[in-house]
Amino acid sequence: MKKNNIFISKLTNKQPTKDITADDIKYKLKKVTSKKNLISVKVSKDIIFSKKNIPIIAGPNGVESRKLIFTVAKYLKKQGVKILRGHAYKPLTFPYRSKQYNETMGQGMDWLDEVKRHVGMKIVTEVTEIQYLDRINLTADILQIGSRNMQNLELLKEVAKIQKPIILKRHFGASLRDLLGAAEHILVEGNKNIILCERGISTPHTHRETSRFILDIQAIPALKELINFPVISDPSHATFWAPWVAPLAYSSIAAGCDGLIIEMHPNPPKSAVDPLQPLNFAQFKEFIQKSKKFAKILNRNII
Ligand code: PEP
Ligand code: MN
Picture 1 (cartoon, rainbow, N blue to C red):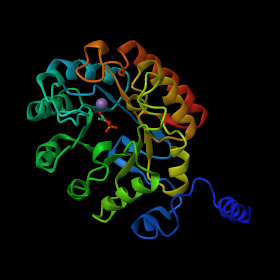
Picture 2 (picture 1 turned 135 degrees about the horizontal axis):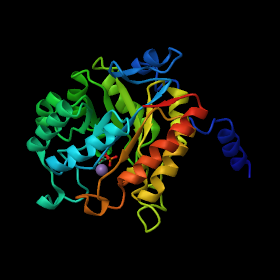
Picture 3 (picture 1 turned 180 degrees about the vertical axis):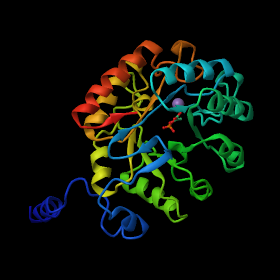
């Protein structure tokens, strides 16, 4: 009985969101985040992740084909979206790479380059390995570290050295402390252009019919309490299910996210990977219109 009491009193003296101690963030993270305001991450003159803006990053899962990426980019441009996502190099849960997944690699990067110049979009794409970094860097405006590579420290180091904005996705099994530790690896290379991304975590109730991951909405205010890098949300990869993407995007805005990643595709059932999760064009249009209203309530702009 006595032991129990001691245990409980220890627990109740702790603040519940704090698996990160002041000690953990006493190095560069502390220096950078001790300034009061959100750190603005500038992609271009008119695309800044800031206290005011909530940039939308949208596009298909993989670049798939020249036609697909042009069709999507032109549509997004009309909707006012400025940042296109699409991966030419793809991490896959199972190792069987085949044409079915359309990992278009160098050719996909060339299509992204064309789209960037002809349609006028900024490009986010994933760096899976150091060997692809030079090619990706020629085209990408924001380099994405995928959740599976969150603690690939050599990769983080090389990507950080480029000094471009980095989207660092939280691994689905990683604590916030692990995520901030990974961010610190970017910071020590002198790169402060860090955008943290919550994309869903595994829990005992996930990986079933009901949901693949659970979007950890709470991570958004929790991270923002500790650091002042932009924190964005990716409800597409969390839910794996298109009908839930918009509601969780709106919830993310309410929770204070500083940007959103939304997967979309002109014909979702035909998407080479994860065909259940992209929004179609009509769904995307509705999402943009409604998210502007939600953002306005909080005095923020969807860009
Ligand atoms: C993606 O953005 O396409 C992706 C693979 O995301 P994650 O690393 O979060 O699974
Ligand atoms: Mn994906």
